[in-house]
Image (cartoon, rainbow, N blue to C red):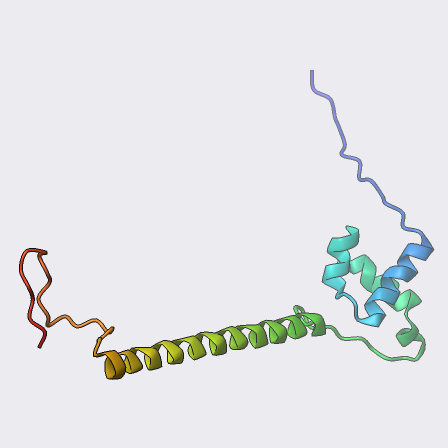
Length: 132
């Protein structure tokens, strides 16, 4: 026995207060349309319609164009990350310079060469090795 079943789509209703809140967050630049649609589980098409309906920019006849993936917050985050990585690289370079200077000083002051020298024979532990 086969029955004809139809898939019923659920229509979700969003209050006007929530719509205006989403549009306000977009206008303040807190989130992009894509971020808002993911955060509130609303289609981006609906958000664009709400922007047209509730936006202050629309009343001033200003057209909003948003590039996909554009967001000043993302750029600021990446710039901050670059600064942090540059700082870390600077600290590492200072440590490298310090260690190289210490190896030079140890050779001059104490006659100890701390750098690897592959021309010297390895010690077997039984015989004395000659220093060249």
